[in-house]
Length: 342
Image (cartoon, rainbow, N blue to C red):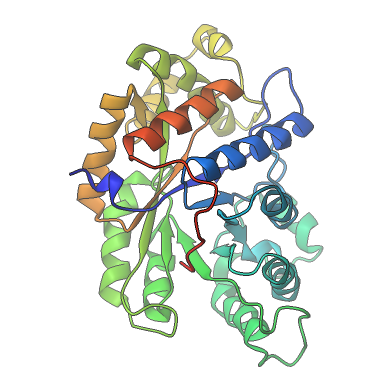
């Protein structure tokens, strides 16, 4: 039996803003996708924090998490993640303590170590020259946890007593080791750092120490997946994601192009090499093709959970991709699924 049918299946959403559309539509589409994901039996629904990106609407995860939690009943909703260097730990504690108080047992707080943006944007977020790098991460993480535990010098109301599960996110070995030593669940960004996936997971498991949170390691892998009825159509609708990566590398981020705009783009030889390298770790195709790719990923990583991000222009194509994926994972549609802690 495929491990895909045995482990939790979750969603990472960037709320993509598409060519010819706007952020309002992107956020409405995310709401609809989250509701579908809940019906289809997905375990959790996370939003990634991005700033100064015209093609991504998920700039304020805490606000969006509250909106989606209100629009759903049982699926876990969280951040994948909050980039801690961009925010005062006190503010993060207040926001997520409030989310947990409003939606007890359904909120996840995924924390990232890197600013995840350029220095100019990070400076605008923090309004100071200090604390813009990841060097202060251990101290800031400790401060954040103390607010939830009620042991800090200040009261982060209503964080104390309303601590959501904290995850560490990573694309290299640092957060993997930290998550292991703290006994926290760990989520790895395979979708943009595939070459580091296995080394990071090995570090996490090797450095893991049991804690009040976990008795043994719990690792989630996030993969970029596009499923369509045929391999050809899947590759076609995945084209805009490749073009977005090219534009990002060129310093020209833009709303997500249509598949035809991506197909007609005048790629250089260097662009083609960049795309080939980028797409090598993505799993794109018909249900049978994607099943093979995901089975291989699950076997190599021994992940406890799979999170999937799907970047396509058409909202109907994105809905269909997650529907086909749920069928591959043999999920049973449900409106009354209970929300597990982790």
